[in-house]
Amino acid sequence: MTRTPTTPFEGQKPGTSGLRKKTRVFMQPNYLENFVQATFDAVGGVSGKTLVLGGDGRYFGREAAAIIARMAAANGAARLIVGQGGWLSTPAASNLIRQRKADGGIILSASHNPGGPDEDFGVKYNMANGGPAPEAVTAAIHARSQEIDGYLILEGGAPDLETQGTADLGGMAIEVVDPVAAYADLMETLFDFDAIRGLFASGFRMRMDSMNAITGPYAVELLERRLGAPAGTVVHATPLPDFGGMHPDPNPTWAHELMAEMMGPAAPDFGAASDGDGDRNMILGRGVYVSPSDSLAVLAANAHLCPGYAGGLKGVARSMPTSAAVDRVAEARGIECHETPTGWKFFGNLMDAGRVSLCGEESFGTGSDHVREKDGLWAVLMWLNILAVRGQSVAEIMADHWEEYGRNYYSRHDYECLPNDIADLMLSILRGELSGLPGRAEAGLVVAAADEFAYTDPIDGSVSQGQGFRILFEGGSRVVLRLSGTGTEGATLRVYYERYAPGPEGLDRDPQEALSDLIRATEAIVGIEGFTGREDPDVIT
Ligand code: VG1
Ligand code: CO
Image (cartoon, rainbow, N blue to C red):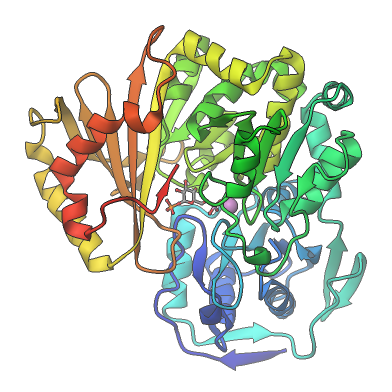
């Protein structure tokens, strides 16, 4: 073991979900090592501790896993549990941390960002509860990274991460495990596999697009092996270092192959996709796209049909920009409903305290207290369980849901790679104007209230400021604006539009059309085109 001297790098500040940078930034000498040592130091060292390690298979993941294993050993960790080949989906890593009572874990992924030598890489630290490090810990990691002067690493070559079993690495037990088995077993405890098997046996067809990312092996095991879906149900099923050039973000823009199939004449009954690290999901029916906010509401309304949730939900939570569709279900059921800032780390305390069992975000993330991360395949299986029990199509389930609760028309517009100074200027001007907005009329809408969202955690009292701008209009429509915390180039502006239609009329409009006055009012107030010069967003979901 040697202590290698080093000097700090600027900008090792974790964002919405871990530290994300261009892969080549991470590949610079000492860059990864500094961040990992800062993480170990910030959590009080790892001496005698058990850690979980794995990632989504992207470029540089294996090399990074080997470096981290040598660092964990040199820092005195007792045991490192690694997914074979360095593979673990984010929810599977969360599950292993919990099941094996580990002290924490490191996940190597930039999630929905593309992978490869010229794309993105990322590292995130999860706590003993299996969930992402809270803000106090990520702030401590950043602070430590700014003063670091050395790191510990075991000399010698890379350990074998390909062979299952336990070996010694400099006094640390390194245990290489099947990345899929424990996760797949957990899913069997939550859902009615017999009912889903029956659905597939009856001729029901689905397409699962794993986008050459980590869910491939999990989806093949669960859907094709354990549930009897025909071979070939899962496509792009092999995790590739560059995701085969795919951008593993399961939305209509990036999962366009799946979209085309599901909207085409030969569409199967059900379609789904997941992201790089397996925590996101997109749900489609034949000819139908289910918005993530609606998916969360449908899962909340139907959870009791699944064995793992048969007793009902304790409560639900959604991130602030997510539509209020789930709020209506919570109200009808008389259960708690919480509104948190963007990012899964804000749900952990609520789940640990037994206040909520189902959480979701508009960004294609849904999950429950079975782990402490959002979980793409879990959402797919929950939909399958609901479809099997209700015996209806996705379109019928959506129509019934809107008829009962009304519809929250919703859309997110993303403007990517904006110059940072322009994005900052635009939002700082908006910040200055917020208090004068109420009463202003634009495009037939009148502003009722405007603020910048701040969150006080009801469990530990911690406060998170500056979590997005909200403009609420009379009649219940709203727009939210915030900057992404997961990008690696320039600024990404996210604009979230929402309008509630109680029904029974007007429940099947095109969302962009239903939201058009809100989009115009926002342009008049914020001036996105004027500041950015962009006529249209890059991605609409
Ligand atoms: C985005 C999403 C957010 C999600 C985060 C991590 O963050 O908006 O809802 O939790 O990605 O998802 P941002 O700051 O870029 O808006 V994942 O699947 O990339 O870990
Ligand atoms: Co992800």
